[in-house]
Image 1 (cartoon, helix red, strand yellow):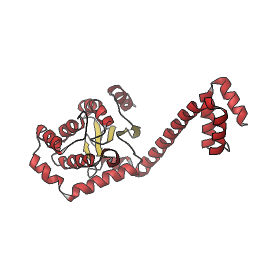
Image 2 (cartoon, rainbow, N blue to C red):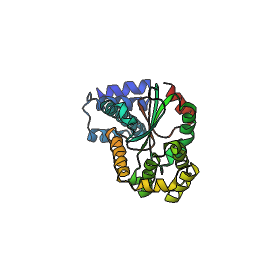
Image 3 (cartoon, rainbow, N blue to C red):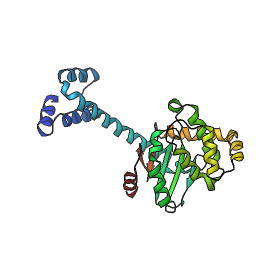
Image 4 (cartoon, rainbow, N blue to C red):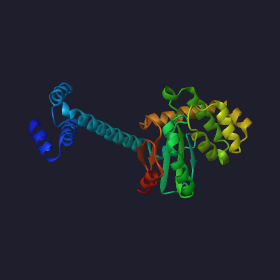
Length: 248
């Protein structure tokens, strides 16, 4: 049966299609194939290895996306718009929604700023936005955590928050420092002394823990991760892609 499938697939589409069929059937329990059998087959057919790896990655990404959507349905879309966790802005009855999990030290989050900022400026009156802290300490260290604390404290001056957020996330390279935080806060029109005092409030740490817990609960494992109109979209975005995906 296995040989027939591979032969047929090769005839109509080549190695990549053959691999896709094998992995799809195996992944759904329709083919009794285990790791040892897979390894043996690949050793006998090394030309299939690149296609096999590519298809395996696609299947893993599809499974992750399905798991995230299932978690989202369980948690509920409203969880992203809890003001205790997210900075929420835009009409409460907006038909379109954009959620972003970000890390101020993440280079891919920085790459996405022009697209997100442009979309925000154009749609802040017809789209509901939620910006959620997800600093990844394992990758970016304590500086990312401290920047997130500053961001949470900055929400207590909401009229200046978005200017501060985009400025801090637009840093070109390197870790965010306290000096950068306070400089961007001053440029955004914030009371810097109030910001410094608010950063020491124990409630800030609790809010940070809550936002990280939400990310883990819905399967977010990297930044940026967007939820566009209720659908997960991991990775950096450019203007054209964001505009296109928000139309759907």
